[in-house]
Image (cartoon, rainbow, N blue to C red; front, side, top):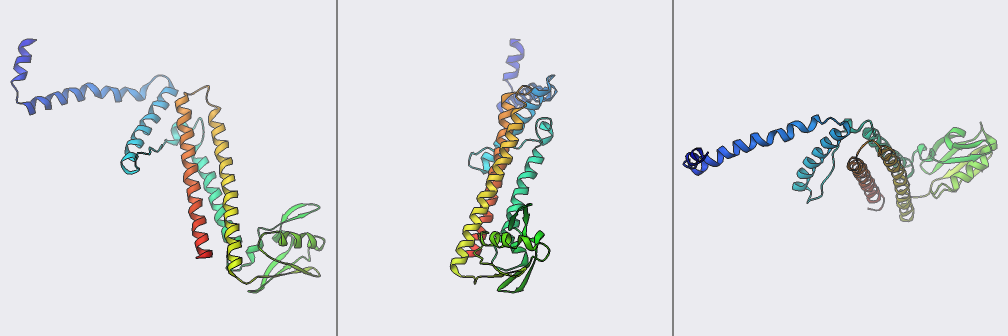
Length: 260
């Protein structure tokens, strides 16, 4: 053995270290080759997710000031939770908020502005546009024709008045006249307040989606490792935070539109 070593030391330093690098690379390669073929399926899934977590953390630390993000392949955990479905449910909350902004927090008057008003009757709760025909007679006046359900006229007036839109409806037989207030600074501030309330309500819905997803994940504790559970929970929280930040941007843009 001493003979070959003595012979090896005679190589120039650069060539010697290159040779060692080749040897070490070939010795380390099997560590990454055998990882994915572990016998235990849950261990294999955890190993693959941890590999993803490691790579994502390294990539994000370069760009994100050391805050590692998780990026789990949804197919690896589909038997525990459907992450794509969770993401879709959260995005549905965002779309509902956008729709609310368009209908209820808009200085441009449209007949759809009253669609969200819910009327409580003896037979249950119904959207105003299911009980009466809403039309825009002029930029300063809504008309709600309650001819099909005249017995619900009083309830509809009450619902419009309490809608938070600063409206004072008046009954004219089966017709409800709803004067539209001028777009004053005070009115814009009220709309900005309503926008914030709608955003907070949307975030409550978002939290319910998160809690539901986390609870479903925890049901798999008996079949997968705690590390796997924690990793999935972190992914869920990460998507929740991203969605909440998207809502904040929508609110910021709407507030700027209203108040300048």
